[in-house]
Length: 333
Image (tube, rainbow, N blue to C red; front, top):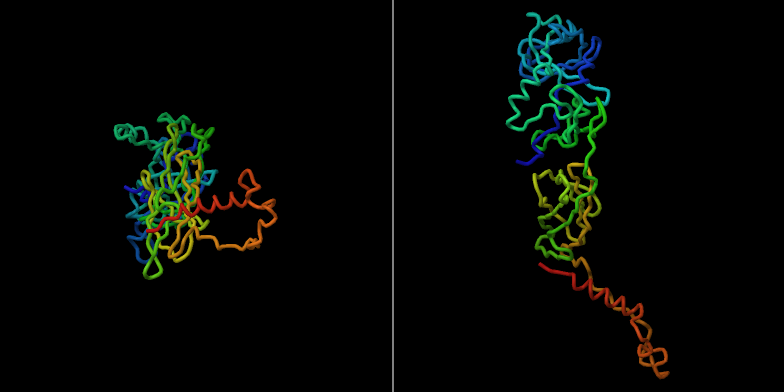
């Protein structure tokens, strides 16, 4: 499965984060239930309300009033709160309310059920609270980050995992953030096409598959994502589960630089050395011959200023060798 299908998620509030659920705090209710709008059902809506307080031995929260509340069809839907760092947490699950939907609604507090849920999911390796131990103490893991900071804004689509959603760095809501042990950027190499490749077309355009290898080293956590860089412009992020990363692109005639960047699971960024390729044109063209100004009379003085006087290659010889090397790099397909 491509990880780009996984959108950023808001975990349950837990540990010290639950202290934000005080009377007067702002919360947002989301659901598909009955409303005074048209159509009445089946449309996802949100409403901002106030936290009235905690009830039922602090296992439920009273939320909203006649100006905004939950209604029939909203059961099981979430209540969110925004923390001081700008990130969002799920804290409530719709439980019950007034029959005519003109009073407070009551939400079961999500964190109350987390210990039981995690005990049921432990065998599957699922951690619902990546920033906390089950007892509520601060114990951030490498997954304690990338929480949505603009949960109400539209970014990307479900198909691409809501790419573009602003997310947080390593969280520090209840203590010091997780410190990644990996501080080395990944090695990034464009492996296909080869540097110096020339592609000839019949209609002036061509689709090319670009392949990039990313190696995060023996101590790294692995690559998280990569970007193709075409003529100096970053584009086409890939979120494949493993390398090599691949893109299929269409390029117009001309000479193009292809590079790549990659970020690992510790947020270190590595960059590939760009390669050159040509579409209907040589990426490393032959140099134009130049007139040195030396005619048939050159060297008539007995060779005092001629090539025979040099005991080692001069600048012109180095240039000739360099051009020979560049010409050898050219390949044609």
